[in-house]
Structures are given as structure tokens and as C-alpha cells.
Image (spheres, one colour):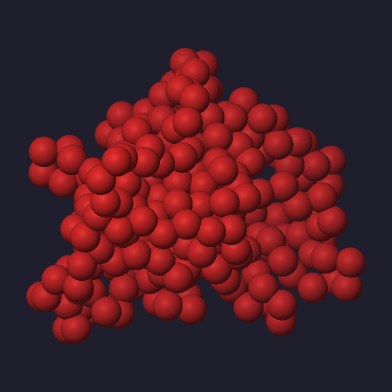
Length: 266
């Protein structure tokens, strides 16, 4: 493997040309049995209510990045605030900041410790894809890490079927009847999986939630597996420490300038 610097500052780019392509996580099989629309709507409302309970997050997670080009493992310090405030800090062996990405939803700043460089600008939809091969907008990333897909009020329920493990699968379509979102709930009504489809019903990404635990009265998935078929990439995030809805210090979503070259994280 060879070092390519900080892959977009979010992933330590130690990539292997001979790495195997990860297999997309399987989803539960449909039984084909229709589910009462009232039950389906209740599941959607429960998902919205659960999302409203989780507005902020601060934690430390282990990130595993596996794609056609190679694999990366890194420790991430993460701070989130709905709907689109994000801070991701790649940490070294002694918890020093190797790279930091912050955004307040409108602007972003990117700091790389290896050359003390800093980049900033307006947020754009392909930001995370460009710097980390993560095919999500910052808003989508924040929502998914908080445990729910971004709100999609323009979508309507097209079908609701039972799954072989006792859960329920929902398909939601746009105004033209095109599939845009697929949601799987477990037998207890917790969101287990979400798939997002781009135009032409092309799967753009999926997110699977695992290891759900009660955290201060709120159910929270401590492991999230993201799949991006376009780049044949799987990203798994496992939280080692996490706080929900903490009070956040002023300026956590900006970088502190120093009098010397570059910038340093707050």
C-alpha cells in the first residue's frame, strides 16, 4: 500500500490497488403480503418523531472505508447539528488532528495538518464526494448519522409489504411515480435501512443501522453501514463514544485561525 496523503482530509489515503470490492449488505426479503396503509403511515410518523429527538451529536467513531481502490481505517471525532452543521476530525494515534472538515451548511473549511493548508468556500452538493468519495450532501450526511434519512415531504407512499424477518418495507415515489426512497423497519418499528434512488430509479446510496441501544431514553444506532454503488464503496462507522443533544461550544463549526501559516482546529 502507498500513502497518498489525506484522502480529501477525511480518510487517511492508504489505498491498495489489489483490494477486493466490498459486497453490498443484503436486505430482508419481501413476503409479498401487503401491509395496512395506516400501519405504514404510523411507521413514517414514528421515524419523523425519532429524528426530531436527535438534533445534535458529539462522539468518537471508528471508520472503515472499503472500495475498489483499497481500504482505510481511521478514528473520527464527530460533531453534528441538524440540519446541516458538521465537523469531522480525523485523529492520529495520539488523538492529534490530522485533518478537519467543518461546515455550517452554507460554507465549509478544510484543514490538512500534513502541509498546514486550509481550503474554504461555499458548500456544494458534491463536496463530500470530491473530498472523501462519500456520495452524500452534507445535509444527507448529518441526517443519516443522526439516525434518519433527510425529510422528503414531496414523496408519497406507493407500497408497503411485510418482510420475512417480521419487519415492514415501504416504497416512496415522487410526483411522477418514480421510486426515490425505500425504507425497511424491523419488527419493533425501528428504522433499519434506507435506500435513496436518483433519477431513473438508480440506487445512489443505502444506509443500514445496527447495534441500536437506548441512550438517555433515545434509541440510537451505534453502527451505520453506508453503501455507494457508483464507486463500489462501503463505509462503516462504529461509535465508541457518543452524546446526544449536548450543549455545543460557540464556534465548533468553524476553524480557528492562527498567526502562523495554515489553521488549527478549535
